Length: 113
Length: 112
Image (cartoon, rainbow over all chains, first blue to last red):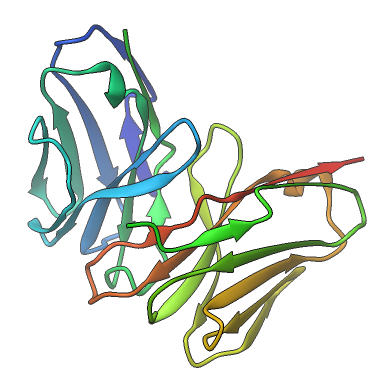
């Protein structure tokens, strides 16, 4: 009955590879997000989607591309991975945009070697 | 851009003591939220306080908001070892659909 799920939980890969992280929410929420948490625990928004439409695209390299096949899914594709991409990536969702509670997934720890 | 700044960065207390964490932010807000993150886990929402509220309680949690000083505090009373976690404040300054802006967090360690 997980509300927001992410796969995989851990991802170890070589520089230059392309990888994807999947996110699904079963809460019926309209808005989904991707956040990046660095090694100092600083959490920063990357993307926000509302009903499959991109709302926010922060200053993120265009190697990162979100894809929302439907309202319940927001996947993150990363091309040409770099060492600096190593971080924990969190997916989240909310029913009314950012004015309400956000529900976070368990995170995906990405390690680029 | 970073909105919230928590203070202190780290806090160590004994079980049964109270823990107070502070958060300052820069711009006008619609609401302010506090989240907890256990080690290796996602963030869990604790409490939301709206810009027109000054104080809110939830169980052992008490949150205050001072919009004139652009600051908030989270008080955890009678702390337990299970309260050991990182605590983040987050603000919403934009339209619905825009994301929360998180502070750097306070790492709380409660020893038994």
